Structures are given as C-alpha cells and as structure tokens.
Image 1 (spheres, rainbow, N blue to C red):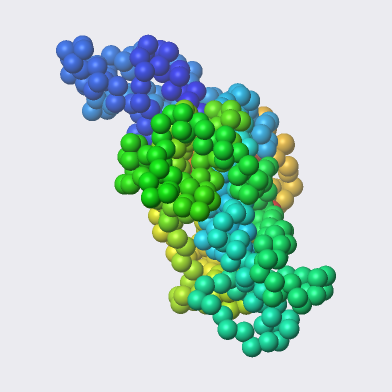
Image 2: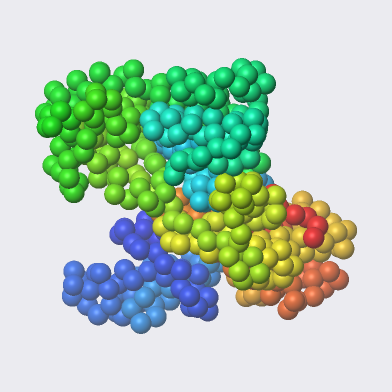
Length: 529
C-alpha cells in the first residue's frame, strides 16, 4: 500500500518524495515534507508550496482528503481505495504481501556451530534470525539459499575424539579417569561412546591414532542431533558444507592470494596482509608446521561461495566473531571479489530467566542450556517469536514463565488470542470470511478504517524488516495490530449490529495480516485458544 501511494504521489508531483506515517492518525494516513525541500528552489514558504501541491489532488479517487498542515502535505486515503486494496489482499489469501517480482539471489549462511555438541540457546538466536530472514526474503521475491558451514577440521575435532575416549573409559568402561582442563562433556558423548564400544570394542578408546576416527563418528551423530533440534524448531537448510572437504582447494586458493601479492612469509609462517584492508594486524594462514589455520579454511569457503555466483552473501555470526569481520573482508578483496557483497550480521548473547531467577544450566548437557530443552518447555512458536522481539545485535533477556502466561504479558498469546477472537466472532455470526468479501466500506467509522489501514501496512513492514534485517519490526507490528483488534472488539458490538458485515470484513483483513505475518516467521496461527 505505502509503495503504491508513494509512486502515485510522485507521478502527480513529478518529484521523488519521502513518505511518512504520522503518529497521529487524525492528521492522515501518510505525510510528506516535500514542500520544505522545494522552498529554496521555488523561493517560497513551505506553507505556500504545500497549499499549491495539495490543490493538485482535488477530487482524486485515491484520497478522501489532501491538506497542507504547517508545510507538510497530509494524505487521508479514501474508503474506495482501502476497499479495493482489502479485496485484493483477501483474494490472495496466504499469498498476501507476496511479490512475484524476481529479485537478487542470496546465499545465507547461519548457525554453523561446531559439530561437537548439541545446539545451545546462544546458537538458537542466530538460527531463528537466519530462518526468519530467509522466509521473509523468499516471500518478497528474493532467491535465497540457506547454508550451514560444518566446522569439522582443526583442534575442535581433535578435542572431540579425546572427549569420546574419556567418556568411553569413564562411563562405559567405569574406569577412574583423570580429565584434562579442556574437553567436551555431556550425555550425548556417553551415548556415542557406547555406540563405538559396541561396534569396535574398548581398545579404540586407548589408541590415539584412532581418535580422529572416533571424532568423525561423533561428528556425524552430533550433526543428526543438530538437524533434528533445528527441524523441531521449524528450521531446515538447503546445503551443508564441510570445512574439511574444502582444504583440498587450499593450494589453488593460495596461488590466487600469492598472485595478488596478499601473502608473505615470516618466522616460518604464512601471513595474510589483512592490515591493508583495515585489520588490526596481519593474520596467520599457515602455521610453522605447514597446516592451514581456521582463517585459511574460511578463505577457501568464501572463495567457494563467490565462485557459485550469487548476487549477495549474508553471514550470521555470534557477537564474539566481531573482530573476525575485517580479516574476512580483506581476504575477499585479495581473492579479487567485491567484499561489499558480503554482509555480516552479529547475534548477541541470550540470558534466560525462570521465575525471575537465572535459568539453571543442565549438567546432563555439559553445563550449557540446550536449545532442545527450551523448545520442549515453551514450544517452538514462543521461542521463535521471543528471539525476534529485539534486534539481533542487542542483548536479549526473557523469562520462560512469562511465555506461559495467558495474558497480554505474553506477546505470542496476546497475538494468537486476537486471531482466535476474530474466528470466534465469525463462528458466532455463522459466516465465513468469503461471505463478506464484496461488502462495501461506505459509512465505516474512523476506528474501523484505521484498523483496515493498519492491516494493509503488512507489505511495507515486511519490506522494511527485510531491508534492515530487523525482524523486530514484524513482531512489533503484530503486537500493535493485535492491540488494535482487541480495542476494536471491546469498543464495538459486532454480531447483530447494523454494521455487522462491514465490521466482519475489516476483521477478516486483520486476521489475514496476522496469519500471514506469523506464518512468514515460521509460527502457526491458532484459531481457538
């Protein structure tokens, strides 16, 4: 709606404008400060210019009223225009706000947690964010491929093999084990160790030459756990890319970097000249022993990404990777690619409370809070919604008990209750949404029209949320729309009133906006509460 109105106004005025939504609906549905930017060109007061521009919209079918207010040009949409957009939306059903325009291709990489243990609650935030961005983008016409980068090379795999050995000797063979300072722990390792013992016997736990073999078995089992936990939360990936599988391409990648003059040798190490692109220091890509570093793996991976020819690339990383951004951007430039095509989003930490107290970590899980435990306690819908109520680069704290409340303090309950209320009103009226599709908005009061207007804002909300990578705009919109629905329901008699069919049509549009927005976020709407 906002895009349609903006394009139309620009056609009439023959000027590009900024179109805003006034906080006070009594001023109109939209406003533009165009007169202020024209004052110098026209050598007139913005107030005079605004009056002259308003006259261009006399008797316009799109607007009920266009007036100049203190230099601003305010637009109030006509009932007939709102009715036209409403019918179009209702006919599209679940395709409402969906774009048929083919837009750029995007490779979206997220989660990419080490395959050394189940996902914890910190991983879950990036997972939900990435999935939401993918869903919204696809709805808007973007060709998005999702990818999980499996970090199955390097020191963490050595530690995984050692940890399986320790779990096997301690819990399967019942030995007294002296644990090192660093190792992975958790019941999942005991299960893996038992499986390995059943197939290979106990000798494997003592043979260091076979630790990598155990690590590979463990990695595959952990990945199955990760995939299941993600699927239980409604998240599935198009691709899984193994870091270990990419190292065969290191020599070829190194040749490209050497040719571009981006590498040098010092103290038997090979360095990337990342300071040339704003990094704090040059970074090691090959150690003294000739083994490539984690950064080398990332360079190979990003070369592989860019070789696949997407228009744009998005990585979602944990906030602890902030210092890693410049070195990766530097590597992309040295590979002869445009680093501006790579967008990196950071996902901040999550703090869980229960009854106002810090949530207790699970010793069973190795002293972390498992994503699966939280999903089991509050359900995937509540988890997804609450993780999207704040921008990903800000800290998030929430209380699990709040998400069990049956009132407005629980946002997902409050929104679903608005949707369920509308369905119950239709049930009471013994009508379907399709029964009121052709009802006219003539004579509707301002409160009902404002609800129509708010429901029709969904396309612009989705567009802004995706453009700014800020899913909070959608959750905020849903809560605001639910509030307007509850307020309207409490203020007006609907079933049995003279305006019954008109009100029902208004509510059917609001229900559609809630359903579509929730579904895009990966949340199923509830018809009955």
